[in-house]
Length: 255
Length: 204
Image (cartoon, rainbow over all chains, first blue to last red; front, side, top):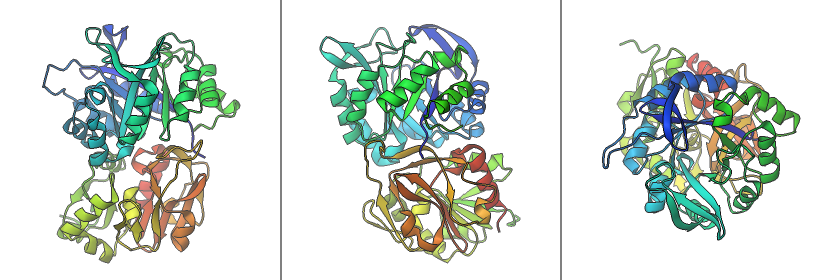
């Protein structure tokens, strides 16, 4: 039976893993290979590297670290952030990543999803959606990593989720902004609704603070995977302990 | 150059051969890429990876003449994911004629509640019959799958070595003679995947 996946997300800037508060004041927390192998050894099912390296307009970012990570990791990993074209994706996949994740560039140019799926197959193409809870319902936000550009993308979350799939997305990461960073649990209501409209794997993001939150999101929202950052990086929750609790709760995971 | 330990990876146009090269490196094996029948000739063993669409991969193999060279190949050959599917007769993906080395057809996985497609993630193997390829691997081993098309276990017939359960019984490992295939990605399947690659590398 297919296991539910636990996915730590690492923020990378200039080849180092960093941690910041609300997208500012980033400080280096560790070496990328050291952290990647540590999470692998602890039983992470997959890793996401979110590249937040600022890219001068029209210039590509040095991603030599992707190859170094690919040499040591024997589990899948995905690279997110700054992938704006088929050529960007090709470089990352050729260096050994399994998947690329696109977010704001796909909102600017939705046909990027079609082009990536045609060239590499849907299984390589993840679409990340940053979704804010508003008086008008769930709305897509863009450039959430950049305080000078972030804002409403003019789209309803569930509509964009459907469109991304019809264009060839092979997986959706839904980051619920209202719960992100608060560690009070995933947004189960939103994820349940997204699940109903999602025929590809759905990854929950935003809000994990305890093992119970993971149990809840797998049981009550039926997501395929749960992504989290600070709850793992802070040491508040160790993956082996989390997996033991998930198994005890009847959730199928890879032990 | 000594050919005794020579492993080739068939380049059928997938963007991510690197992860396979690195996985072989971790087993202490080097490999070279083959883009022509000449590059395949003389190799001790070959791996046919494949990510992307069946039609693209088959048209690249046909253009280079590698399709015929693979049909005639008499050393151990391991197809991975799409590479395994290409060993069969025909794929519903783009209605593509495949290599026809193994009897059977490749059909789409259909999404159902609780079973999104692609089938993506870690799943267990159910061995059907013992084989050196699966030596040391059992029902407790988890391996990583990513695929939207599959060979139904029943269609793989006598070639079937192991299945995995995704609502339907999916052919996870197959073999007839020197031709082997796995639907999962050993290069991204942790210790179990490393064991499978080690088993394959021991064949010649």
